[in-house]
Amino acid sequence: MGKRWIPLEANPDVMNQFIWGLGVPEGDAQFCDVYGLDDDLLAMVPQPVLAVLLLYPLTSLDEEEKEESGASGASAAGAKDLSKKVYFTKQTVGNACGTIGVIHAIGNATSQIKLVEGSYFEKFYKKTADMDPVQRAAFLEEDDEMEDAHSVAASAGDTDANVDVNEHFVCFSCVDGELYELDGRKSEPISHGPSSPETLLQNVWCCCSFCK
Image (cartoon, rainbow, N blue to C red; front, top):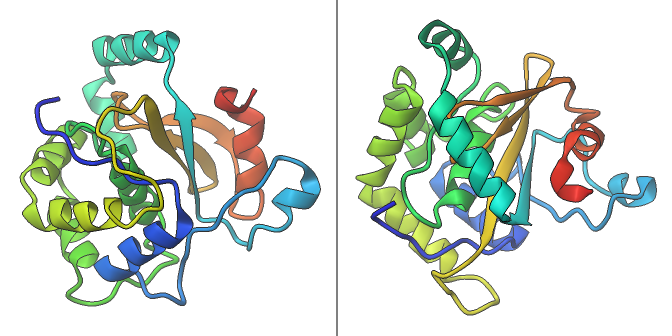
């Protein structure tokens, strides 16, 4: 990865201002913290859940899995069929995983979120709708408007910005009744079985090895 951005802070206030400024109506969706995995704490999260963004520390095993994913790839036919219903992009900009996670979250919830007409997000998803994940990544890498918006959001956090981080955001979304792991470091979305907006949060913790 040649270009590197300042990483986004895992801060709902920062991310909410980020998405609202790019075209998500404030009344349609917002990020919130998950304070723990106990049933009582999970019940505090407003329903329905459209997506989960998880920030976790990278390990050497994650790097190996990334290389294996890149080497294996998806069949052309399989990738084409999947791309028709799951919005997915690769990540080619360093430290952009937070923004990639946001793009995956919003891009797979457009049936529940009515984006502001003429907004950045509305135009972005229309322009990239027929692109493959690699083309979307290349488009995003040259997109000055998103880079500027990311920079503003990254500078709005409570902690000092540092480009040298060893943590990674991954998004989990429910699409057509199926739970998908959306990680721009990997070659394609990963299915984790049946899910729904009402059970998405619990389903993520059940399948997610990062939390174990």
